[in-house]
Length: 295
Image (cartoon, rainbow, N blue to C red):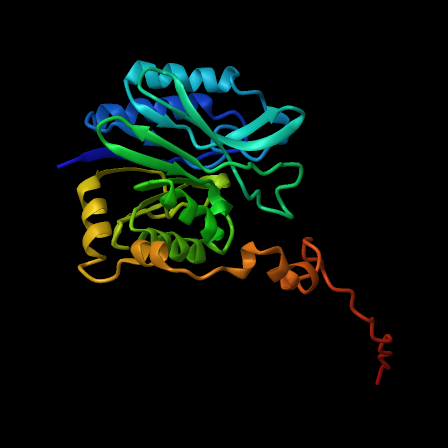
């Protein structure tokens, strides 16, 4: 049996520099659950959504997280933070191995536009291997709203998608339904870790390759340690979800061409949807003043 232990940390994250808090949470998680091999935080947990805190990678924050991974001998995905790269800002998540080395970095492909202004989307899908275990993919928050991103990771061999999130809005229910569906239709584990406090409404969740809920957190701070069973991923992909649907094989064998990938088939996107912009308060026609006569 090939299992791998991961702990998501749903941290009560205020605005500002949270590096010290994250370091303490890692220490607590390792002390309580010494069998955990990977620790993961929510999106923008380190500094919040502050573009002024953007820094290069390698840089001071990433080096700090490398030292923590090396100290505790763990894989570490410290959520994400804003990266300055070639004059642009990306929302980036580093992947750090137990030797304290950066294995890869994922730049969020779909910044939350039109709200995440000033952030440039990444252009690459990100997967990495944990030796003798399996292949992991990485996406960040709004990436999951585009099913092509998760299907791309599955097509690249990902058996787990790690998904740091910052959601402090009323659409968390919808996100959780997307995460659960993504796990099932791609036959992989989906690890969706949100912040709590000012930087998130919590309700982190982990879903199995058969679409089952392994754990869903509440709104408070929480450490979520689980074992991922890679044999279950491989058996599900070979034999079907609960012995039934085999969607990855059917997708592989289909001969259909999808119009959204063909420039000739994108007329609806190009002409019908309108510009990408924030919703604004409507202007109302003021009614004439009503005179009130005394009786």
